[in-house]
Image (tube, rainbow, N blue to C red; front, side, top):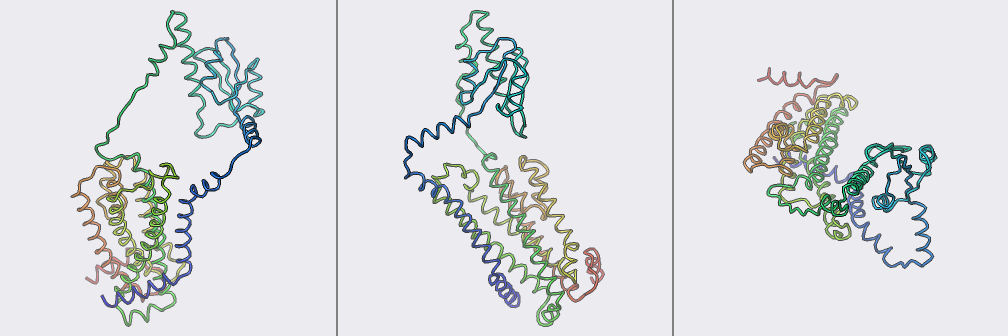
Length: 416
Protein backbone atom coordinates (compact mmCIF):
# COMPACT_ATOMS: atom_id res chain seq x y z
CA UNK A 1 0.00 0.00 0.00
CA UNK A 2 2.91 2.35 0.73
CA UNK A 3 4.24 1.92 -2.81
CA UNK A 4 0.76 2.53 -4.25
CA UNK A 5 0.64 5.74 -2.21
CA UNK A 6 4.02 6.82 -3.59
CA UNK A 7 2.93 6.17 -7.18
CA UNK A 8 -0.41 7.88 -6.51
CA UNK A 9 1.38 10.97 -5.18
CA UNK A 10 3.73 11.04 -8.17
CA UNK A 11 0.92 10.65 -10.73
CA UNK A 12 -1.23 13.29 -9.01
CA UNK A 13 1.75 15.62 -9.18
CA UNK A 14 1.83 15.06 -12.94
CA UNK A 15 -1.90 15.82 -13.24
CA UNK A 16 -1.97 18.91 -11.03
CA UNK A 17 1.33 20.11 -12.44
CA UNK A 18 -0.04 19.95 -15.97
CA UNK A 19 -0.90 23.39 -17.31
CA UNK A 20 -3.47 21.97 -19.73
CA UNK A 21 -5.29 20.19 -16.87
CA UNK A 22 -5.33 23.25 -14.61
CA UNK A 23 -6.20 25.73 -17.36
CA UNK A 24 -9.03 23.58 -18.74
CA UNK A 25 -10.46 23.07 -15.23
CA UNK A 26 -10.36 26.78 -14.39
CA UNK A 27 -11.72 27.86 -17.79
CA UNK A 28 -14.63 25.39 -17.66
CA UNK A 29 -15.49 26.44 -14.09
CA UNK A 30 -15.36 30.14 -15.05
CA UNK A 31 -17.45 29.43 -18.17
CA UNK A 32 -20.15 27.79 -16.03
CA UNK A 33 -20.11 30.73 -13.61
CA UNK A 34 -20.29 33.20 -16.50
CA UNK A 35 -23.28 31.44 -18.06
CA UNK A 36 -25.15 31.38 -14.74
CA UNK A 37 -24.45 35.10 -14.16
CA UNK A 38 -25.41 36.10 -17.72
CA UNK A 39 -29.11 36.92 -17.00
CA UNK A 40 -28.12 39.02 -13.95
CA UNK A 41 -25.51 40.95 -15.95
CA UNK A 42 -27.93 41.44 -18.84
CA UNK A 43 -30.61 42.84 -16.53
CA UNK A 44 -28.13 45.21 -14.88
CA UNK A 45 -27.39 46.73 -18.29
CA UNK A 46 -31.00 46.94 -19.48
CA UNK A 47 -32.88 47.91 -16.30
CA UNK A 48 -31.24 51.32 -15.94
CA UNK A 49 -31.80 52.48 -19.50
CA UNK A 50 -34.96 54.43 -20.38
CA UNK A 51 -36.17 54.32 -23.95
CA UNK A 52 -37.33 57.54 -25.58
CA UNK A 53 -40.55 57.99 -27.57
CA UNK A 54 -38.56 57.90 -30.79
CA UNK A 55 -36.98 54.60 -29.83
CA UNK A 56 -40.40 53.20 -28.96
CA UNK A 57 -41.82 54.32 -32.32
CA UNK A 58 -38.82 52.82 -34.10
CA UNK A 59 -39.37 49.53 -32.27
CA UNK A 60 -43.06 49.56 -33.23
CA UNK A 61 -42.15 50.16 -36.87
CA UNK A 62 -39.57 47.39 -36.68
CA UNK A 63 -42.15 45.02 -35.19
CA UNK A 64 -44.55 45.83 -38.01
CA UNK A 65 -41.83 45.18 -40.58
CA UNK A 66 -41.00 41.85 -38.96
CA UNK A 67 -44.66 40.84 -38.61
CA UNK A 68 -45.49 37.55 -40.32
CA UNK A 69 -47.71 37.74 -43.40
CA UNK A 70 -50.18 34.96 -44.21
CA UNK A 71 -51.91 35.06 -47.60
CA UNK A 72 -55.28 33.42 -48.19
CA UNK A 73 -57.88 32.99 -50.94
CA UNK A 74 -61.49 32.12 -50.17
CA UNK A 75 -62.39 30.01 -53.21
CA UNK A 76 -65.87 29.11 -51.91
CA UNK A 77 -66.80 32.34 -50.10
CA UNK A 78 -67.27 30.68 -46.71
CA UNK A 79 -64.47 32.24 -44.66
CA UNK A 80 -65.17 34.45 -41.65
CA UNK A 81 -62.41 37.08 -41.58
CA UNK A 82 -63.20 38.18 -38.02
CA UNK A 83 -62.88 34.62 -36.75
CA UNK A 84 -59.66 34.18 -38.75
CA UNK A 85 -58.19 37.30 -37.12
CA UNK A 86 -58.97 35.82 -33.70
CA UNK A 87 -57.05 32.67 -34.57
CA UNK A 88 -54.05 34.68 -35.86
CA UNK A 89 -53.97 37.85 -33.71
CA UNK A 90 -50.25 38.56 -34.25
CA UNK A 91 -50.20 37.90 -37.99
CA UNK A 92 -50.88 40.22 -40.93
CA UNK A 93 -53.56 38.50 -43.04
CA UNK A 94 -53.54 39.35 -46.74
CA UNK A 95 -56.58 38.47 -48.81
CA UNK A 96 -55.86 37.42 -52.40
CA UNK A 97 -58.02 37.41 -55.53
CA UNK A 98 -57.05 33.90 -56.65
CA UNK A 99 -54.86 30.88 -55.85
CA UNK A 100 -52.15 32.04 -58.27
CA UNK A 101 -51.64 35.23 -56.25
CA UNK A 102 -51.29 33.21 -53.04
CA UNK A 103 -48.69 30.98 -54.64
CA UNK A 104 -46.84 33.99 -56.08
CA UNK A 105 -46.64 35.77 -52.71
CA UNK A 106 -45.28 32.68 -50.98
CA UNK A 107 -42.84 31.96 -53.81
CA UNK A 108 -41.47 35.51 -53.70
CA UNK A 109 -41.33 35.23 -49.87
CA UNK A 110 -43.60 38.25 -49.46
CA UNK A 111 -45.84 35.93 -47.48
CA UNK A 112 -44.66 33.27 -45.07
CA UNK A 113 -47.63 30.99 -45.67
CA UNK A 114 -50.59 30.71 -47.99
CA UNK A 115 -54.00 29.04 -47.78
CA UNK A 116 -56.53 28.40 -50.53
CA UNK A 117 -59.83 27.30 -48.97
CA UNK A 118 -62.33 25.23 -50.96
CA UNK A 119 -64.61 24.13 -48.10
CA UNK A 120 -64.54 23.61 -44.35
CA UNK A 121 -62.96 20.22 -44.96
CA UNK A 122 -60.60 20.96 -47.86
CA UNK A 123 -57.82 23.49 -48.46
CA UNK A 124 -54.38 23.81 -50.05
CA UNK A 125 -51.43 24.94 -47.96
CA UNK A 126 -48.42 26.80 -49.46
CA UNK A 127 -45.01 27.24 -47.82
CA UNK A 128 -41.66 28.09 -49.42
CA UNK A 129 -39.27 26.18 -47.17
CA UNK A 130 -40.70 23.87 -44.55
CA UNK A 131 -38.63 23.24 -41.43
CA UNK A 132 -38.30 19.86 -39.78
CA UNK A 133 -40.53 20.76 -36.84
CA UNK A 134 -42.80 23.33 -38.53
CA UNK A 135 -46.51 22.70 -38.13
CA UNK A 136 -48.63 25.55 -39.48
CA UNK A 137 -51.70 23.50 -40.35
CA UNK A 138 -52.85 22.80 -36.79
CA UNK A 139 -54.18 26.30 -36.10
CA UNK A 140 -55.82 26.53 -39.51
CA UNK A 141 -57.49 23.14 -39.01
CA UNK A 142 -58.92 24.49 -35.75
CA UNK A 143 -60.16 27.59 -37.58
CA UNK A 144 -61.99 25.52 -40.21
CA UNK A 145 -63.45 23.34 -37.47
CA UNK A 146 -64.81 26.44 -35.71
CA UNK A 147 -66.10 27.74 -39.05
CA UNK A 148 -68.00 24.49 -39.65
CA UNK A 149 -69.53 24.70 -36.17
CA UNK A 150 -70.56 28.30 -36.78
CA UNK A 151 -72.26 27.37 -40.05
CA UNK A 152 -74.04 24.49 -38.32
CA UNK A 153 -75.17 26.78 -35.49
CA UNK A 154 -76.59 29.33 -37.93
CA UNK A 155 -78.34 26.61 -39.95
CA UNK A 156 -79.98 25.09 -36.85
CA UNK A 157 -80.62 28.30 -34.92
CA UNK A 158 -78.08 27.53 -32.18
CA UNK A 159 -75.98 29.90 -30.09
CA UNK A 160 -72.46 29.61 -31.53
CA UNK A 161 -70.75 31.27 -28.53
CA UNK A 162 -72.49 28.90 -26.13
CA UNK A 163 -71.49 25.92 -28.26
CA UNK A 164 -67.85 27.07 -28.32
CA UNK A 165 -67.84 27.63 -24.55
CA UNK A 166 -68.82 23.99 -24.10
CA UNK A 167 -66.30 22.83 -26.67
CA UNK A 168 -63.45 24.75 -25.02
CA UNK A 169 -64.54 24.40 -21.42
CA UNK A 170 -61.95 25.42 -18.82
CA UNK A 171 -60.97 22.15 -17.17
CA UNK A 172 -58.79 22.32 -14.05
CA UNK A 173 -56.63 19.30 -13.29
CA UNK A 174 -54.51 18.90 -10.16
CA UNK A 175 -51.54 16.60 -10.57
CA UNK A 176 -50.32 14.56 -7.59
CA UNK A 177 -47.16 12.55 -8.28
CA UNK A 178 -46.80 9.72 -5.79
CA UNK A 179 -43.61 8.34 -7.30
CA UNK A 180 -41.07 10.19 -9.44
CA UNK A 181 -41.59 12.79 -12.13
CA UNK A 182 -39.66 11.38 -15.09
CA UNK A 183 -40.48 14.46 -17.17
CA UNK A 184 -38.65 16.90 -14.89
CA UNK A 185 -35.86 14.42 -14.09
CA UNK A 186 -35.14 13.49 -17.70
CA UNK A 187 -32.79 16.29 -18.68
CA UNK A 188 -30.36 16.20 -15.77
CA UNK A 189 -30.32 12.39 -15.99
CA UNK A 190 -29.59 12.64 -19.72
CA UNK A 191 -26.76 15.12 -19.12
CA UNK A 192 -25.16 13.13 -16.28
CA UNK A 193 -25.20 9.91 -18.34
CA UNK A 194 -23.33 11.80 -21.08
CA UNK A 195 -20.90 13.25 -18.50
CA UNK A 196 -19.90 9.86 -17.06
CA UNK A 197 -19.58 8.43 -20.57
CA UNK A 198 -17.22 11.24 -21.59
CA UNK A 199 -15.17 10.89 -18.41
CA UNK A 200 -14.65 7.17 -18.94
CA UNK A 201 -13.64 7.59 -22.58
CA UNK A 202 -11.40 10.65 -22.08
CA UNK A 203 -9.61 9.71 -18.87
CA UNK A 204 -9.62 5.98 -19.58
CA UNK A 205 -7.68 6.66 -22.76
CA UNK A 206 -5.44 9.04 -20.81
CA UNK A 207 -4.54 6.24 -18.37
CA UNK A 208 -3.95 3.78 -21.22
CA UNK A 209 -1.80 6.35 -23.05
CA UNK A 210 0.31 6.94 -19.94
CA UNK A 211 0.98 3.22 -19.55
CA UNK A 212 1.74 2.74 -23.25
CA UNK A 213 4.00 5.81 -23.28
CA UNK A 214 6.09 4.55 -20.35
CA UNK A 215 6.38 1.17 -22.04
CA UNK A 216 7.40 2.67 -25.38
CA UNK A 217 10.20 4.80 -23.87
CA UNK A 218 11.38 1.89 -21.68
CA UNK A 219 10.90 3.82 -18.41
CA UNK A 220 8.62 0.98 -17.27
CA UNK A 221 11.71 -1.27 -17.07
CA UNK A 222 13.12 0.90 -14.27
CA UNK A 223 9.79 1.06 -12.43
CA UNK A 224 9.16 -2.69 -12.34
CA UNK A 225 12.60 -3.35 -10.79
CA UNK A 226 11.69 -1.32 -7.70
CA UNK A 227 7.89 -1.59 -7.60
CA UNK A 228 5.34 -4.32 -8.15
CA UNK A 229 3.72 -3.81 -11.55
CA UNK A 230 0.29 -4.28 -9.98
CA UNK A 231 1.02 -1.37 -7.63
CA UNK A 232 1.95 0.75 -10.65
CA UNK A 233 -1.41 0.07 -12.30
CA UNK A 234 -3.38 0.71 -9.11
CA UNK A 235 -1.49 3.93 -8.45
CA UNK A 236 -2.13 5.20 -11.98
CA UNK A 237 -5.82 4.30 -11.87
CA UNK A 238 -6.40 5.86 -8.45
CA UNK A 239 -4.56 9.03 -9.51
CA UNK A 240 -6.64 9.30 -12.68
CA UNK A 241 -9.81 8.79 -10.63
CA UNK A 242 -8.91 11.47 -8.08
CA UNK A 243 -7.93 13.95 -10.81
CA UNK A 244 -11.10 13.26 -12.80
CA UNK A 245 -13.55 13.61 -9.94
CA UNK A 246 -11.72 16.64 -8.57
CA UNK A 247 -12.11 18.36 -11.93
CA UNK A 248 -15.76 17.36 -12.36
CA UNK A 249 -16.59 18.17 -8.73
CA UNK A 250 -15.06 21.64 -9.00
CA UNK A 251 -16.92 22.41 -12.24
CA UNK A 252 -20.25 21.09 -10.91
CA UNK A 253 -19.79 23.01 -7.64
CA UNK A 254 -19.14 26.22 -9.58
CA UNK A 255 -22.20 25.57 -11.73
CA UNK A 256 -24.61 24.74 -8.89
CA UNK A 257 -23.43 27.48 -6.51
CA UNK A 258 -23.60 30.19 -9.18
CA UNK A 259 -27.02 28.90 -10.33
CA UNK A 260 -28.45 29.02 -6.80
CA UNK A 261 -27.09 32.56 -6.45
CA UNK A 262 -28.82 33.63 -9.69
CA UNK A 263 -31.86 31.33 -9.58
CA UNK A 264 -34.44 34.13 -9.67
CA UNK A 265 -32.93 35.57 -12.86
CA UNK A 266 -33.41 32.30 -14.73
CA UNK A 267 -37.13 32.20 -13.95
CA UNK A 268 -37.15 28.44 -13.40
CA UNK A 269 -35.75 27.81 -16.88
CA UNK A 270 -32.75 25.84 -15.59
CA UNK A 271 -34.59 24.29 -12.65
CA UNK A 272 -35.43 21.07 -14.48
CA UNK A 273 -31.73 20.56 -15.23
CA UNK A 274 -29.94 21.77 -12.10
CA UNK A 275 -32.39 21.08 -9.26
CA UNK A 276 -30.91 17.63 -8.71
CA UNK A 277 -32.15 15.72 -5.62
CA UNK A 278 -29.51 14.59 -3.12
CA UNK A 279 -30.30 10.87 -3.57
CA UNK A 280 -29.66 11.20 -7.31
CA UNK A 281 -26.32 12.95 -6.71
CA UNK A 282 -25.31 10.21 -4.25
CA UNK A 283 -26.27 7.50 -6.78
CA UNK A 284 -24.31 9.34 -9.48
CA UNK A 285 -21.24 9.52 -7.22
CA UNK A 286 -21.41 5.87 -6.10
CA UNK A 287 -22.12 4.29 -9.48
CA UNK A 288 -20.11 6.84 -11.46
CA UNK A 289 -17.04 6.17 -9.31
CA UNK A 290 -17.50 2.39 -9.57
CA UNK A 291 -17.99 2.49 -13.33
CA UNK A 292 -14.99 4.75 -13.80
CA UNK A 293 -12.72 2.48 -11.73
CA UNK A 294 -13.95 -0.61 -13.59
CA UNK A 295 -13.10 0.81 -16.99
CA UNK A 296 -9.94 2.58 -15.76
CA UNK A 297 -8.43 -0.77 -14.76
CA UNK A 298 -9.50 -2.20 -18.11
CA UNK A 299 -7.92 0.70 -20.04
CA UNK A 300 -4.72 0.46 -17.97
CA UNK A 301 -4.36 -3.24 -18.75
CA UNK A 302 -5.07 -2.63 -22.44
CA UNK A 303 -2.40 0.07 -22.50
CA UNK A 304 0.18 -2.49 -21.37
CA UNK A 305 -0.60 -4.73 -24.35
CA UNK A 306 1.04 -2.37 -26.85
CA UNK A 307 4.61 -1.21 -27.31
CA UNK A 308 3.82 1.80 -29.50
CA UNK A 309 1.38 4.64 -28.91
CA UNK A 310 0.03 4.33 -32.46
CA UNK A 311 -1.16 0.77 -31.70
CA UNK A 312 -3.19 1.90 -28.69
CA UNK A 313 -6.46 2.64 -30.50
CA UNK A 314 -6.60 -0.89 -31.88
CA UNK A 315 -5.89 -2.41 -28.46
CA UNK A 316 -8.37 -0.17 -26.61
CA UNK A 317 -11.06 -0.71 -29.25
CA UNK A 318 -12.71 -3.44 -27.15
CA UNK A 319 -13.27 -1.14 -24.19
CA UNK A 320 -14.34 1.71 -26.46
CA UNK A 321 -16.92 -0.50 -28.16
CA UNK A 322 -18.38 -1.72 -24.85
CA UNK A 323 -18.67 1.83 -23.50
CA UNK A 324 -20.32 3.07 -26.70
CA UNK A 325 -22.86 0.22 -26.77
CA UNK A 326 -23.79 0.81 -23.12
CA UNK A 327 -24.09 4.55 -23.77
CA UNK A 328 -26.53 4.18 -26.65
CA UNK A 329 -28.56 1.40 -25.00
CA UNK A 330 -29.10 3.47 -21.84
CA UNK A 331 -29.90 6.71 -23.68
CA UNK A 332 -32.40 4.98 -25.97
CA UNK A 333 -34.17 3.48 -22.95
CA UNK A 334 -34.27 6.59 -20.74
CA UNK A 335 -37.97 6.98 -21.55
CA UNK A 336 -38.61 3.45 -20.24
CA UNK A 337 -36.35 3.08 -17.20
CA UNK A 338 -38.65 0.47 -15.65
CA UNK A 339 -38.37 -1.72 -18.75
CA UNK A 340 -36.61 -5.08 -18.93
CA UNK A 341 -33.56 -3.77 -20.85
CA UNK A 342 -32.63 -1.15 -18.26
CA UNK A 343 -33.33 -3.55 -15.39
CA UNK A 344 -30.91 -6.12 -16.82
CA UNK A 345 -28.29 -3.44 -17.57
CA UNK A 346 -28.58 -2.07 -14.01
CA UNK A 347 -27.05 -5.29 -12.61
CA UNK A 348 -24.27 -5.77 -15.18
CA UNK A 349 -20.97 -4.18 -14.06
CA UNK A 350 -20.26 -2.95 -17.60
CA UNK A 351 -23.48 -0.89 -17.63
CA UNK A 352 -24.81 -0.46 -14.07
CA UNK A 353 -22.83 2.77 -13.62
CA UNK A 354 -25.36 4.54 -15.87
CA UNK A 355 -28.36 2.17 -15.97
CA UNK A 356 -28.90 1.94 -12.19
CA UNK A 357 -28.28 5.66 -11.84
CA UNK A 358 -31.01 6.27 -14.44
CA UNK A 359 -33.40 4.00 -12.54
CA UNK A 360 -32.71 5.86 -9.28
CA UNK A 361 -33.26 9.23 -10.98
CA UNK A 362 -36.36 8.43 -13.03
CA UNK A 363 -37.75 5.01 -12.17
CA UNK A 364 -39.19 2.93 -9.37
CA UNK A 365 -36.34 1.04 -7.72
CA UNK A 366 -36.12 -0.54 -4.26
CA UNK A 367 -33.21 0.17 -1.92
CA UNK A 368 -32.14 -3.49 -1.89
CA UNK A 369 -31.84 -3.42 -5.69
CA UNK A 370 -29.50 -0.42 -5.53
CA UNK A 371 -27.40 -2.08 -2.80
CA UNK A 372 -27.09 -5.38 -4.71
CA UNK A 373 -26.16 -3.56 -7.91
CA UNK A 374 -23.51 -1.50 -6.06
CA UNK A 375 -22.06 -4.64 -4.43
CA UNK A 376 -21.86 -6.43 -7.80
CA UNK A 377 -20.21 -3.37 -9.36
CA UNK A 378 -17.53 -2.95 -6.69
CA UNK A 379 -16.77 -6.68 -6.52
CA UNK A 380 -16.32 -6.49 -10.29
CA UNK A 381 -14.04 -3.46 -9.84
CA UNK A 382 -11.83 -5.50 -7.50
CA UNK A 383 -11.90 -8.42 -9.94
CA UNK A 384 -11.02 -6.17 -12.88
CA UNK A 385 -8.25 -4.60 -10.81
CA UNK A 386 -6.74 -8.02 -10.01
CA UNK A 387 -7.12 -9.24 -13.61
CA UNK A 388 -5.80 -5.95 -14.99
CA UNK A 389 -2.84 -6.12 -12.62
CA UNK A 390 -1.93 -9.61 -13.81
CA UNK A 391 -2.23 -8.64 -17.47
CA UNK A 392 -0.19 -5.51 -16.75
CA UNK A 393 2.54 -7.52 -15.01
CA UNK A 394 2.80 -10.11 -17.79
CA UNK A 395 2.74 -7.56 -20.60
CA UNK A 396 4.87 -4.63 -19.45
CA UNK A 397 8.22 -6.14 -20.46
CA UNK A 398 7.02 -7.71 -23.69
CA UNK A 399 7.77 -5.67 -26.80
CA UNK A 400 7.08 -6.00 -30.50
CA UNK A 401 3.64 -6.55 -32.00
CA UNK A 402 0.57 -5.67 -29.90
CA UNK A 403 -0.60 -8.51 -27.63
CA UNK A 404 -4.21 -9.55 -28.12
CA UNK A 405 -6.42 -9.37 -25.03
CA UNK A 406 -7.65 -12.93 -25.62
CA UNK A 407 -4.05 -14.12 -25.86
CA UNK A 408 -3.11 -12.38 -22.61
CA UNK A 409 -6.06 -13.98 -20.77
CA UNK A 410 -5.24 -17.45 -22.16
CA UNK A 411 -1.66 -17.04 -20.99
CA UNK A 412 -2.88 -16.26 -17.48
CA UNK A 413 -4.97 -19.45 -17.51
CA UNK A 414 -1.98 -21.56 -18.52
CA UNK A 415 0.12 -20.07 -15.72
CA UNK A 416 -2.51 -21.14 -13.21
